[in-house]
Image (cartoon, rainbow over all chains, first blue to last red; front, side, top):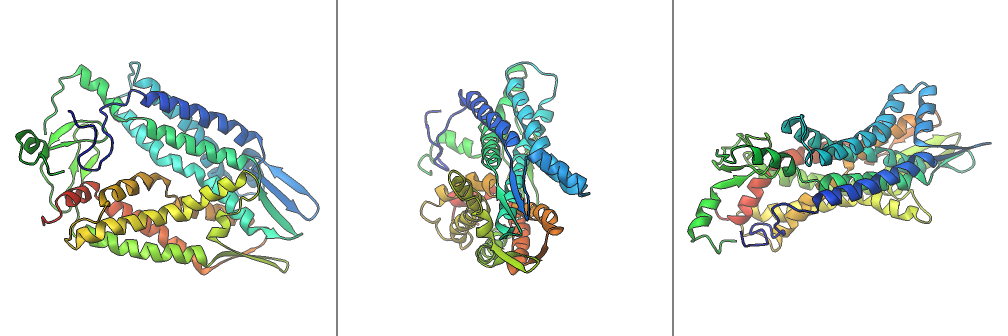
Length: 187
Length: 215
C-alpha cells in the first residue's frame, strides 16, 4: 500500500514478517537451553547454624511438600516446571502448525496462543520468591538465604520464551483459513 | 496523519477496522459506551468504550503513582528470629542479587517490579491528561502511548505480590514475619493496576489522539 510507516502510531508497517518464525525458533532455542542449567544448578543456598543447604527448583519443592506445605510446593512446581515446559511445547506446536496442516481449529490455537502470552509472565514468580527470601532472611549467623546460579538462568529462560511468544504473529494462524475460503469478510 | 483526509480511498479506509489478532477486515460501526465491538472471526474485543474511562484511568494512575513511590521506600516486610531483626523494602528485595553477573538480575527485577509499572503510569498520565481536558495531544504523545503498550507484558507487580505470599509461607516456620506499611500499599497497588488495564480501550485512546477536538 505504499506507506512503510503507520500513519497513526509511526510504527514500521509490514504485512507479514517473513522472519517471524525464524525469530520464534531462535528465541525458543535460547530459552530452552537456559532452562537446563536452571534446573541442574542450585536455586537457593540456605545457611543455618551448622549446615549449608543447596536446593534446586525441584528439590526445594519436594522439601516443602515433606514439611507439609503441599499448596506452596504445588505453586512452585506449577510456576517453575509445568508452565515453562508446557509453554515450550505450545509455542513449538503453534509454530509447526502454521506451516503444516492440522486438525485443531483456529479458535483453539488462537486460545492456546492467548493462554501462552498471558501465563508466560507468571513463571517469574520463582525469581521473585528467591529475591524476597534472600533480601529478608539475612540474620547474621542464625540463618541466611542467598540466590544460587540457577536463578539467573531461570530468569533468562522466562524472558526469552516471552520474547519468543511475542515474535509469533497470531495472524499466521488465520492466514491458512483465509487462503482456503472465500477471502471476503465483511461486517 | 490527516494529510490524505481529502482523498477518496482514505475516506473509505476510515470506516474500516482490521482485527490486530487475525487480520479480518470489518466495516466499523462505533459502539456506544458500555457496548463492545468484537471480531466475528476470532472474538477479540476490538473497541470497548466506557463512560468517563479517561477520568477513571487518570484517577487510578495517580493513586498507583503514589502507591509505587510509597511501597518502594517504606519497609515492606520485617523478620524476627531469636532477637535478630531485619526489615526490607521492595527495592531491597529487588536488589537482593548482588555480586558478579547477578547484578544484571537485580536490575532486571527492580525494573520489572518498580520501574516498568512506574514508567507505564507516567506515560499514561502524559498521554491521557491532555486528551481528557480536550486539549491538543501532548508532544510525542503517540510515541509515548506506543511505548506504554509495549511495556505492558513486562510490568509484573501482581506476580511479585503472589511471590510474596509464597515467600512468607516458606519463612513462616523459620522466623516471625511482620508486614510493614509498604506491604499493604503494594496489595492495593496490584488491584489498581489490574483495574486500570481493564478500563483502557486502546482504540478509543488512538482515536482521541487523532481527533482531539471531537466529543
